[in-house]
Amino acid sequence: MYQQVFQSTCLFLLIFVVCCTPPEDPIKCSSKNTNCTITNSYGAFPDRSICQAAEVVYPSNEEELISIVAEATRNKRKMKVATRFSHSIPKLVCPDGQDGLLISTNYLNHTLKIDVEAMTMTVESGVTLRQLINEAAKAGLALPYTPYWWGLTIGGLLSTGAHGSTLWSNGSAVHDYLLELRIVSPGGAEDGYAKVRRLKDGDKDFNAAKVSLGVLGVISQVTLKLQPLFKRSITYLTKNDSDLGDIVASFGNQHEFADITWYPSQRKAIYRIDDRVSSNTPGNGLYDFTPFRPTASLELGLIRTLEEGQESLSDVGGKCINAEIVILTLTTTAYGLTNNGIAFTGYPVIGYHNHLQASGTCLDSLDNALITACAWDPRVKGEFFHQTTFSVSLSMAKNFIQDVQKLIEFEPKAMCGVELYNGILMRYVKASSAYLGKQEDAVDFDITYYRSKDPMTPRLYEDILEEVEQLALYKYGALPHWGKNRNVAFDGVIKKYKNGREFLKVKELYDPFGLFSSEWTDQVLGLKNSVSMDKEVYDPLALFSSEWTGQVLGLKNSVSVDKEGCALEGLCICSQDFHCAPTKGYYCRPGKVYKDARVCVLM
Image 1 (cartoon, helix red, strand yellow):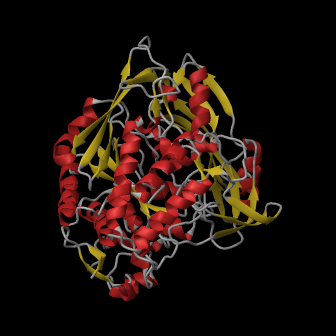
Image 2 (tube, helix red, strand yellow):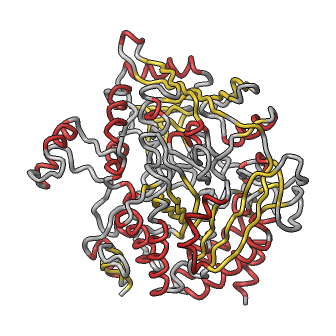
Image 3 (tube, helix red, strand yellow):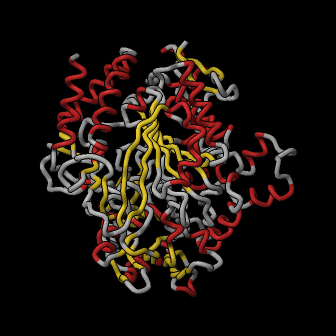
């Protein structure tokens, strides 16, 4: 009873606190802009490393940016682009070594042009999604499909292929509404050591630049195709998940902004019925997603302490009870939807698109000495989690869902921990022309779950989530989200992209010395040195290779880390018991449903 009252109180405060301390810059320097470190907004990369750089610069216009890239190129200096909030979980912002240069887009944050007649908008790459949405709406325009979190920069979300949810039109990825971009890359002496390329839809390299992981240079400006501002109608419908697999494909085609929130242990699915309506339909709804609101730091600490206690005591029942309370609270308050900006009075919620497409008010208020914060702010004791996010092709989504349901039959309470973080968000994505974009129409599964502060401490039902991850990535060939995931999701990933080789050719052209690359991006892209591509032409299946020759030729470039406990953090897939935690009773064993999986099981 205490836990139920406590959790209800915490959620009440989470919903009604209205001010918070904004996140700090992810770059910290010991002296003015030198001797720096960078992390992500969660304060921890998948391997918990701290990335170092010698210096950070803050260009405020394209001319300054060109000068910076030219000077670094002249000195053969490694560079990485950093954004205001740094929400990518993998180490995309890490330069190699300690002498690298960070180029922050904090001050490249201007709207350059809005053409109402042509319905286009040109912005600098550091403009946040929130800025773009608001500026477009003032002109009576809208970007139709976006991520739900507005604390992303345009350059960052394009580079990682970020998306909303739809199978309609060109799909849910923002990069598929891109008309033009300008990118500053290293150049030769004849270019003044920096080259500015203006790429338009239809140009030869455009599909490489649309999703680039930051390895082609610095995006300085982008032009997006917009639409007239419109209204939407949203209703959340709760159903049993028994027919989820049968419904998933058709539901995405029936509703323009459809998504599904799945609670597997509770055997529930929440269907978002979300479509355009006439602009004269009454309604002034607002979406202020509850988990993205400011939260009292004291309450965050208490909630985290409670979950840590449940993990240490293996209190699965307590987690399930709290998950039920969380979900009941979210569903009865419509996940933060209001009919008039103040209160939720019932479905449907109707309002203008710019008020419903994204939110994130925890970014938005005056500094209050961390009395409140975003729930994941590392300066307070709050959420600390893993995210596993992947796209399963639409044709295979039913089978994948049914395999997960079979796992739940083995362990009915295994997903209660996921449900504490609002379950599995299922969004729809469409095949993209981007070389590193989605290869076919798919369902994106976004899973957030508890991460221990101690990397050697297993989680409750460690094996179930590992099996779900391996089911998706290996049995169903899922594509990982570039801006999320643990290391194992990126092993061999470039081979899943039919135009991966074409992307690498463009990368070699734009940045032949790899100044915008790092060990991490080289591993993700399957690169170590140029000989690897030539060898693959003659022996693509590596029938004449061995582990030794692979190491000699630089082909042994997995992102996996082979060390004690590496499977607990998703740094490897276990092959030996010491990759798990045998001293704590966790051993490497086959999966329950997917027998080829290797997971850490409590014996």
